[in-house]
Length: 208
Image (cartoon, rainbow, N blue to C red; front, side):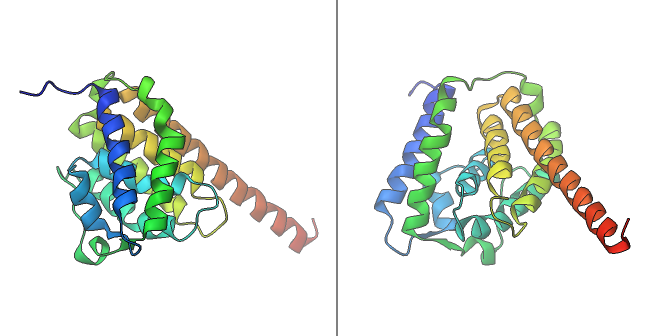
């Protein structure tokens, strides 16, 4: 029997799988359904991590918009307590081309290769089924932020989703908390900026 892999080894295998998939992809790429099949992962953490990768890459367009909706669908399912991720056929048929997959693989290695040395099981109660529902609720809001059609709005919430889902995948509650804090801080900044901008505009219009 093959001995169980350590968290770092599991993470490394996932990143290597994404890299190999990108290298072997045809120019038209793969559908989301085909990608999930190749990952051979049913956990929400793994699928959300994969989808969050292109959102972490600054100034990458089109691909984050493609994956944001299925990310939100998975986050909603997590919030509702579903045990395994599922995508409706319309979303499952969405395609990511080879260039997009290559960017995801490169970004995954560049931005998250370092976490292999830090991630480990701890605060496991945060990654339990009940806690996952709470985490899912936060991720829904982070995914909403990714959908905001403004330059650079996908990067920070993308990191938040990726780190939190990484923590879920590796049963690292501390990583989950770190991802949630990052995402909440970003949402708070957006709300503050929106109210500040509206207040300024109201002052200009009223002459006060």
